[in-house]
Image (cartoon, rainbow, N blue to C red; front, side, top):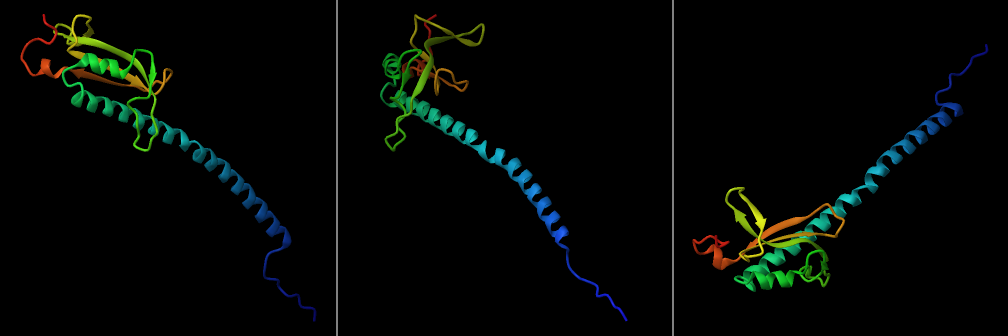
Length: 160
């Protein structure tokens, strides 16, 4: 009698095809996840830039409240000129200075009819400052500093 034994296991062809398919799926998975992992640095860098810019503005506000509480002209001079890049207000505590670009710095007055602030050369009661990380950045922060002596009395801050 001629009996054939039934083999239990995989043939060499089945093992090779399985390894090839596993390799193709792995390559597709790595290429898909690789682009997602390498692009996370953009969001992290933007968060760091935003945090540094916020620190600069917070330092300006603290300086306005402590050193220049009734002298917006002094604050305006210490901030820098329109269109300039400065590093004065950005000490991160570790010695790193943060540079910022002054997009707009002007004295403004509230306009009762338009309910908006307008540029005013005759008054220094409110100072509008807009800063950016650099001149080409689309991100910016604005703040309106007020002269504490003007806000503490009930007179019109622009004198009209």
